[in-house]
Image (cartoon, rainbow, N blue to C red; front, side, top):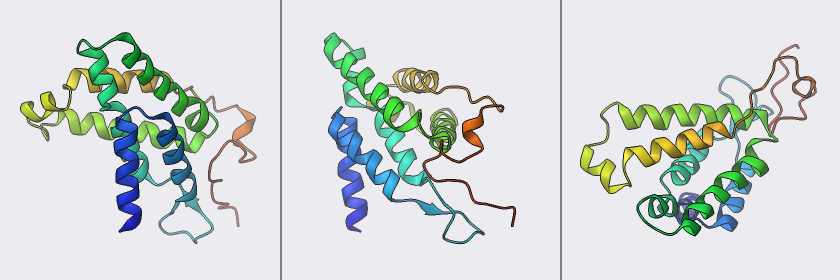
Length: 167
């Protein structure tokens, strides 16, 4: 219960454009793995629930909405700094995080366009266009992972190393 409240406060801080809160949230993600279904506890992975909540806070950020709807350029620059910070310190170094960020983007985009949100709610949240633009900006920050890259073999490119299924 306390963890949920803490994550809620972190989500609000990220939506407010606070970089220190984004760093803290990434630390919470790194220290709160979820077990892989069907495998022992030695095989954790990134918590999709927490990551998706962070992604929603990033792409529906009040800072970005203010910047796009006539606010000054500094507000938009702060949002770009948030996306860059998230990408450079958390997404780029970890291939497993990249995978789950891509899944989260698909989840948010699907929920946005499948009619789950009413038009009024979408407008109140800053509009679907702004959210779609932020999703695209976040998507453009994720590097393509070539299959031949050697860093995937030794597990050093993962936040949580994949389970050893050979044995």
